[in-house]
Image 1 (spheres, rainbow, N blue to C red):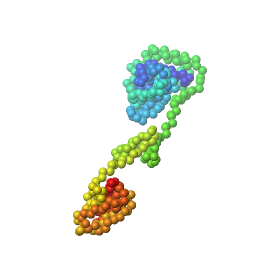
Image 2 (tube, rainbow, N blue to C red):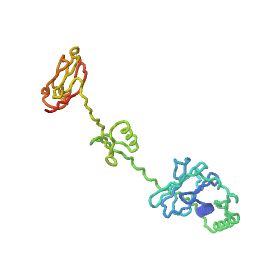
Image 3 (cartoon, helix red, strand yellow):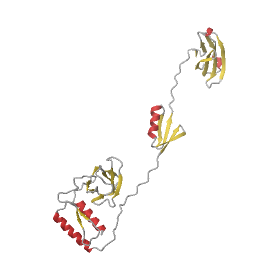
Image 4 (cartoon, rainbow, N blue to C red):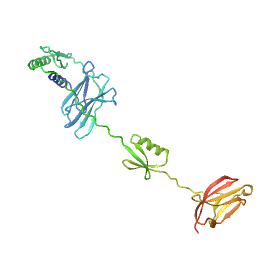
Length: 316
């Protein structure tokens, strides 16, 4: 009996109030902090309609019901748990194509909670069964009386039945997708992994704090190309090569200081050194270096390094 009575209430409530057409919907209070959410569905194919509520109009929405049959043209739900005038409601609609839409959120309208034609009316069957049928309060008195009489007759004819509780069927939530990671390489060497959540912070640290280049090699691999500045060679004013390729040692104050010059290959392998340079201008023949190319030197003043630099001896 409970099952039949509940169906009558839902049918009366939805058919006697104006309903917005999806993606719009109607939400209004029905006393005792109860809220009725209803809508008219004109979509040709809908695979899911879920009712969501929140104390915030933008976030923190939670699904309170997924409609068992979303294709019903006119449908609705009575929210009797946790409802209040401060709650916001919205619908989550999934179409047959896989596209989905969230409706705009809204609070329940309190102006429809009472009708000028009367209050809620209770019908108690003559057999005093514990059943309650609520007739929408905007039905004309004559129509309400006729409806009450029909319901009483239906109650008399029905055999007593055990109460049936139909729990709302909620679609199981999909399992969360595993977090994505990116491999970071420098040339062909893997140096670290970065999660998708940390990717923006990592990218900003490379772009804003270094001059390295960050390149996506594919969907999950990042290659770092270190910045290598171009070396601008500026000859030393103390030791350099002349037009003939010979090495010149120019120390104008050599007589008043104790200078020593050490020569090295470009890989810093020692070649020879000139101790106690006393001449302000000294030329070292390039043949002492055995080959052309880059060479390095250290100029020491009284044992302390005055300059470290290099020079180039061209081929003949």
